[in-house]
Image 1: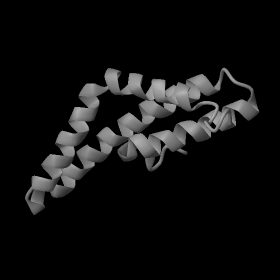
Image 2: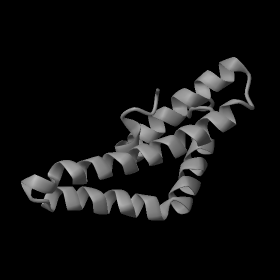
Image 3: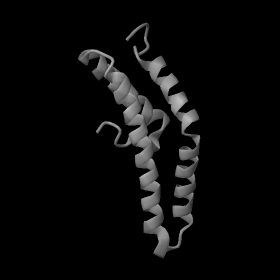
Length: 103
């Protein structure tokens, strides 16, 4: 850590802001799918929830690709620190996508 902040925190914050901008449609679709699931009658709920999960998985995969692409530019010790910080901030800022980001 540098001066009480994690070394990669600012970088990851910028990456997440960019992700939010570039994936605004996906984020909207995730929220709409969750809302549709919550309003769905029982006979449609499972199908609606699967759609929601598919969208969450797509977002999580995008985030993991972003993380892994940058991590490949670092040495192994730095990459581990970066990945931990990335995963921590995803769980904090984008909890829908953070549950399984560490895979």
